[in-house]
Length: 291
Image (cartoon, rainbow, N blue to C red):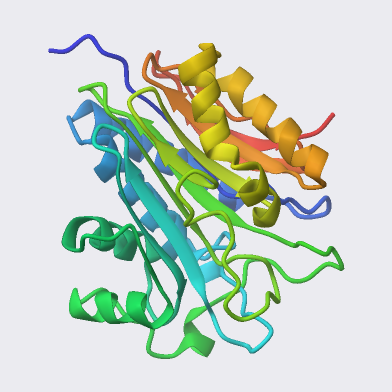
């Protein structure tokens, strides 16, 4: 039996509402942390774990991703997702995809069945249809928006998961319905490798927050580079990246796990819903709030 550690972090978005109770979300996140822990102990790959966990986040309807997404300004549901294997740096992503239950599963199909990294719009839809992914036949009946516009310029929501498996391999996945009432065709950081999602042999990262600012700061890639070249911890690197996001006018959160099992989940928004499987087996699940 290998002595390598396992670890995982998942998030349900950096946006929280002060008057809302998140008991269901916390229980759900904890359950998924337990699921991921068991999968990793049983020898599942980090890639399979992050896909499974993000799929469950998508179909729950509890977060602004998958079933919980909100429509854009044309009352259409355009979803984004990305997945990345740190051991090979293979990656797949979909952007502005419509009509399918799981963007993250479509993203993995992009990675494994095409020579590309990203497919957008109609191209993503056609791939999902070709691969017989579960379709949404009646968007008005299927989607149950987990958040409503609250007057903020960038009401957001994203889900993500990062994991370290028993072979020492890392993976990351992120999925989102994007900003509420967004312009049709808008794509945020989530499906952009290096901005909202990243995994290599040192760290796996998933971001949540105001995507435009994470794109402009290359948040995930910047954090990964600081770990590789400056030998910072995942927490130090993620906090630096968030400071850069803040400097540009945005906020949000970053989850990360390093090859040694160290985890990070800093944020500078009102709060962040997350769960953590530490390398020693401890699990935390809750809503972190700024103090």
